Length: 295
Image (cartoon, rainbow, N blue to C red; front, side, top):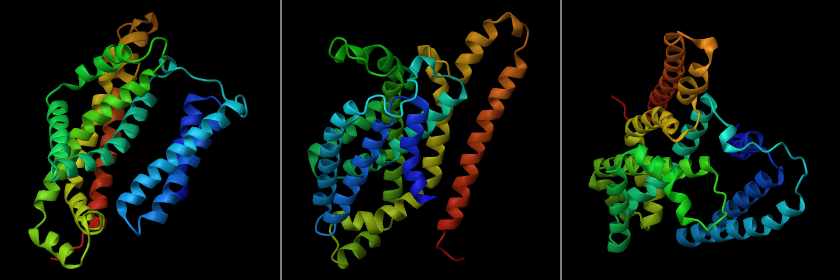
């Protein structure tokens, strides 16, 4: 199950977007190579392992670009443009991908905001405060219209990818504040215990501080995740036909559905309730599994 979880994002990309199977295979190979290099170097230094893994993955993906060109058409499915995707599947794609990407980015932003290095700290502060002060619907309009002006002429930047980037940035800013609260809730003795063991900053954060802070932050992170999943319906304002967009557009525009409103909206509400309630129950189960205090 653990290995399938790692492979599934690449498999799902190929099954949903189509195209040659070489693209997800090269992406998976680059991620595996980067992780192996990281695992090899992290024992000596976290920074060396981290940056070494990134460089190794980037080189693997650069070489893989030539492989995907050579394998064009091999085990290829029909390519599916973003405009042809819709329904509840689009909400699921945006919700799952954006939450998964925003969590590690939020951790980095939370640590950067508490950094003693002024440049890194102020970059994180400005990013978090700016994103939290801008409505998500504005960021979606930026993704749909404004972002294209910063790209070279003729560049085709997938709309779903643009939306994913903006929603991920939006969620990461809120998750960063939740995790910062978890870090602030830890007693000072935990930091002193890490220092007494001779751990450097990266080791202390990875082995002692972050595991406890993330456990404290689970309710807040889940709250952001549930809100983010419901906010995926806002993509209907930029002409993306998610579940709400399908109901408001093609379905109600059809004469076959004249006078039918409550059934459609009730079914949409039921789907969102099932998913959000499931997330909430999973978070409570996870809190019980991670509970280490005995009363």
